[in-house]
Image (cartoon, each protein chain N blue to C red):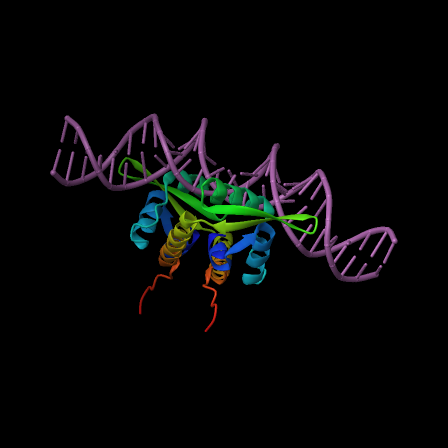
Length: 98
Length: 98
DNA sequence: CAAATATACCTAAGAATTTTAGGTATCCAA
DNA sequence: TTGGATACCTAAAATTCTTAGGTATATTTG
């Protein structure tokens, strides 16, 4: 979520779920029950700020990264890559002989 | 855990934690609070079977994959790689121009 | 040799996160 | 006009992990 917000500049919740689905070729589904509580937590932590916009009669809540959020994005991305690296080390086939 | 058991043939709990630590250069720590309940669950599901061995006065509980466990290992490994792939698609930097 | 560290098993409360399963309402296409 | 997409949200239950124990033997080290 932080990564997408960093790249797109501003996004609303539903839009994030669609991006995740599209980018992953439908392999990852970010459910709304996971999405919204997390966005609210990010806001409470000061990593994102919001702006309400009315589109027709419907409310849309745009999220943008704060400076703190951009830093968090970088460190979280690095942290995730380290996790992947460590997992690949563990899951790398053990070469028995040759 | 399934992957390590598949490769090593048989392992005991404490040994698994040490392998994880060594293979990952200390970056991953599998705590005992996560380890043992999971081993017990795998056993209940029939993915592993156990054999108690006394080493001196101390008990050691060896775990081995069942046939079902070997299949589960393969599918879980594939599943994890798919997860990584999907995540990399999502986290891959969006090329703005060139 | 005593004390600390390592080996070796385990559990349970609490915390964190996700799934599931709702609820409300507008917009658009068949 | 009705079903699916858009758009927000929450709360109970399930799942999983961390934390923080408990017990005991073996080994290393000051």
